[in-house]
View 1 (tube, rainbow, N blue to C red):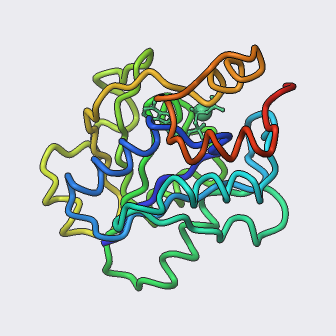
View 2 (cartoon, rainbow, N blue to C red; view 1 turned 120 degrees about the vertical axis):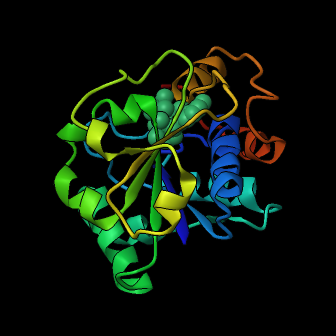
Length: 207
Ligand code: ATP
Ligand code: MG
């Protein structure tokens, strides 16, 4: 079984890290991949470059054995489509291995706008994690795919959707960038190692 959390990570923060760890523990995933996008579709382009976002991610997961930074999207040209990333994982792990793609409710609400979203559901399960300020409507296009038993996801390779209430941390990269740009101190919202990197590279001084 493999778990994935994709994102822009501009910068990575404790909302991402706690989510990744709680998903890994909930499903017994030994290998949780955090994957920074190079050219994210559907949003403004990142402020920090890909190398810097990867470096911050690597610092953030350095002391946690179950979390790994995965560089594959940084080596592809063009938009970083999740469907391509998931196809590359599927080719690696084979047809039977469950893949659990994690995304916050905010991202899930736009899921049907994602490139080849139906193909994504043939490649992976979705774990939709709670995020302050957003809620999942009780019914929708996804209702017949929703599962409440984690074993359903562990016993099939793809196609189910599971909602997980992770610890609610109202932290966003957008707000962190604004905090830094205003010269305020964002400590305790992200790892110290990441904050040290931001300060030594003078990132997010201007937006
Ligand atoms: P930005 O404000 O730049 O969009 P962000 O904080 O939303 O940054 P992303 O890199 O866009 O971070 O998010 C990557 C993934 O992590 C998305 O699926 C998002 O929903 C999820 N996520 C981000 N922050 C949290 C949080 N505090 N709690 C739960 N999930 C989160
Ligand atoms: Mg976001």
